Length: 297
Image 1 (cartoon, rainbow, N blue to C red):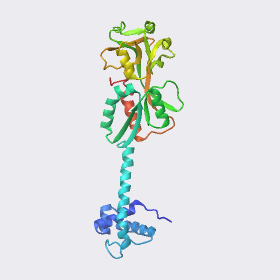
Image 2 (cartoon, rainbow, N blue to C red):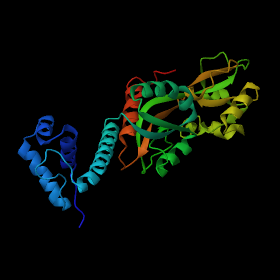
Image 3 (cartoon, rainbow, N blue to C red):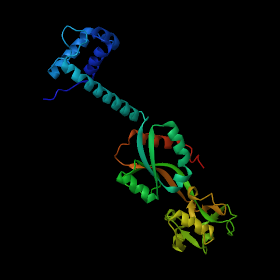
Image 4 (cartoon, rainbow, N blue to C red):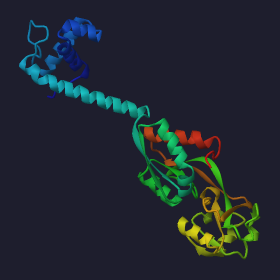
């Protein structure tokens, strides 16, 4: 039968050896000498062999000399593991992976990640970007801990924490007849060369749904879509965060009637607990985005 070793008596043995005797070890450990001696005798009983020579202050038996470095190694491993587990529980260490839609990844995450890493320098973050369907699949499969995206409908497998609304507008080139407008009604887009994209389905179920049937092109890749818009080949609808504002020739015009927006929030698997690191990121994002809308523009 394997003897079950408790860490505390092993520490007592090391203290006796390191401090030169039972009396000095008891002072160092703030324990009475009888209690120290009894704990070591119980350890010897479990092991079936004496660790110290009788009648000496701290002379190890040959068996005790064999055990000493192994006791020390076990205690060091125990303490390292204890520190690691406590650090993770205290959100001072750990690893998390998250999936984010590209517009949020490029517009919001740089500042969020900078502040998060500053607050939790011991936590490593893996960021994966893709469309809303990609984010959903990554979360459901467990490839990532949390997602930051929209959901196109209710999902029994996911828990959704809304954070903010991202309004949808019309994007066109700066020389387009509509470019100087501040808002548009959907009827004013009839007759335009409309380009569909992955976010066009936001129009489903709204008064502007008929625009989906007017698409001359459909481009899912944002780089290709932007190049097509800059070339003046048509107009499209995009959430404001997805608008490529670095392109000076493009304009964003609010779609006022109907007012359309996507609800962006945190996504996690329903029924599963988050790791301390993932919970830290979840709490941080809610603190940063949940209360004040979109502070990072």
